[in-house]
Image (cartoon, rainbow, N blue to C red):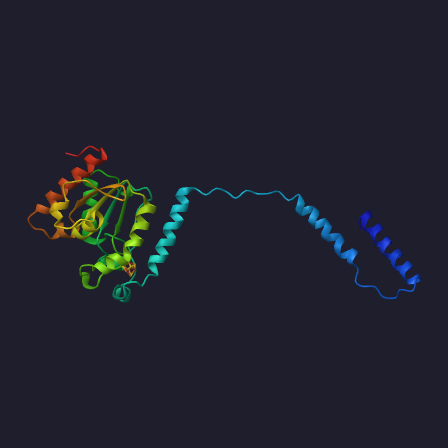
Length: 251
Ligand code: SF4
């Protein structure tokens, strides 16, 4: 036991003995003994070092917010028919600060089964288009306007697109792509906020949330076109994209 503690015990004992000599037989539980260690604790707390919270990398913050959004989407039941028939939601894939974001309309059956956008034939064709543009596949972000497959791959409804619009915008703002390509009429109309045929939206550079936007055909439509016309037109659109990006157009 330390010297200071022995002094304290002796002081308490002599204090109690003087009280008994004075006729005091009972005392309340010793407050002084209770307070003494508290003062030591308070003294230790006074000198405790203050640790500043670490600054988080803004990229990590965005990645974390994107995962929160992904979880929100996975739990969403705003479109009751899609909620009842989907196997899972299809969020999107690719890096933050993507070079180009490719935006389709909605997941199909393959995407619904795998939880990934642009799988199967159309995904294979889209990746061939990206490779033909000599864009690094690892720098592109792929996603859809809505996150659930419409039954039997029917077209999306205006209500479904409106229900999912906020998810799409938040995702787009977190990913922050430098350029965006709308694939097909639905995505093109929604991103440009213009009506009419796809032919009227192609061949010019629009803007979506301040990001240069080019409209072109959806890979599914290119696959189904036996004339080769849509393939040629898509290549024209990709050349426009590459020129807008300041990149060389491959021969
Ligand atoms: S399409 Fe979008 S809004 Fe509709 S249920 Fe799926 S996640 Fe929700």
